[in-house]
Length: 311
Image (cartoon, rainbow, N blue to C red; front, side, top):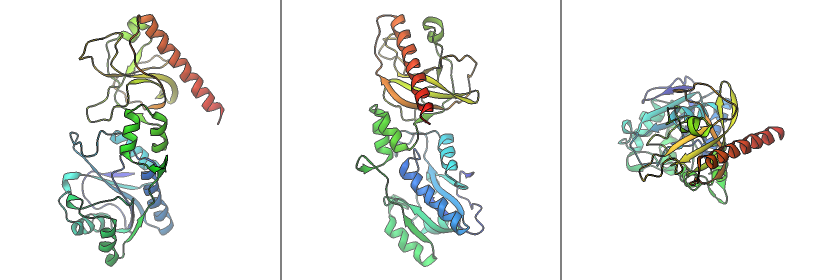
């Protein structure tokens, strides 16, 4: 997948089928829009393309980021998108709806077919909606296709609902709406050595950057991709009241990978969250904390063994 990080003409000599949206999380609804564009492109000899945008790291317009940019790119590419434009929001936020259609969809994409959800807006101050998009594109011979919104639990799937589910510890709901397990790929950093030094459970620390959505504090059954293979693991997110009870204690994300030893500092392994196991709590001793970590790791190994056995 070719990625463009500014407004510029993409490679689409026969024209393109373009998926439009922010695609935060690349959830089930987003996948339907992107997949429809890919299917249309393949059937009509067009280039499968997507137009989205990148917000400043400090922006709260869309809420905490569900995925890192590399994750977002990988998930979009896996759906078959060939040309992907992710311009800074400020490059086009002031365009009128008319200018957006001409300068972005026509000049950059040579668009022939467009795909979006029924809540898509565009142009300065979100002045354009799907009806306006149809009006502007019809004279240009550009088809506009509204993809039905994905549903879960009787309601429309949205990034807002996914954020709420993650923040409330409803991982099953979040993963169902995402269509694939929630995952992070933050760099592994040095911790305080408590896991290896006092608990006998060395951990990998992948702490959340400020702009990222942080899930509910707790212990999770996870798996992590290390040395070319997936390994069952147990991950704790939150403050560590057993080892640091101060009010300003740091929030950490620490993963214990049983039967693994190796130096992965600076690497960015993918860590998938599969089950919420239990809340974080203060233990009376380090031994009790170590026992919980080992118990969670054993549960993770059993969970993935059963999952693999069912395939």
